[in-house]
Amino acid sequence: LGDEFRILHPQANAAVGSGIAEFRRRSERARQQQKRLIEAFTSVEASADPYLYGHSLRMADLGQKVSAVLELDDDSRNTVVMGAQLSQLGKLFIPRELLTKSGRLSPEELAEVQRAPEHAARVLGSVDFDLPIARALHEMYENPDGSGYPRGLMGEAILPEARILAVLNAFCAMVSSRSYREGKSVQEALAELRNPARFDQTVVEQLAEVLETTEGMKAMKA
Image: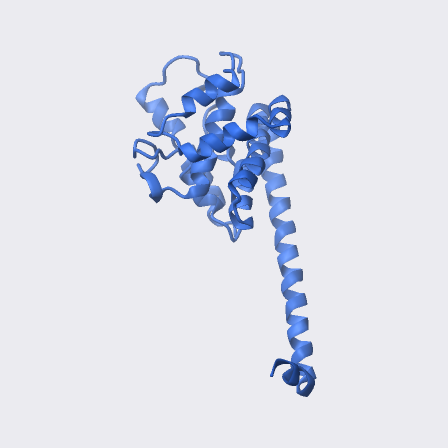
């Protein structure tokens, strides 16, 4: 029937082909617009805080590798990688002195720092990525036991991509040296991540696997 339809209705066949071509053109334009938008955000981040920019790049690199090990589909992989690239966006709205403070934060200061995911969701919420990137960043600081923020979500209620970003974000923060502290070793950071109350252990073990590879070691030296 399909061949007969194409023979008897060449105009319909041409219309279908034209529609597919137009869909592909629109999809490519959307991808390019997303790429330019992310580049614009990360450019601002690089100018405002080179540390946060480097943090995002390392997260994205490791996110690509962990996504491959987890065998994520394209949408989930893109959500993780693009989310990693934009992961520190919300911190640009937090006073720098709070992000670099070496001592304990006051309750008011802590509340201000914990607004970062809300800032990110606010900025990205109106951007049509056709992926749950804004949600992933909003839930990146949630913990499996419900002790995270901003909504105290638990377990499977947290977006899977957000659970991946949570592990990557914490790991990259732990191993990076700052002016007020030395970074932890890879093994020290992994030991802290092996805490099921705070992190998805499947993701932690896949990250550990990646870090044992040549590509994983390269990411740590970048």
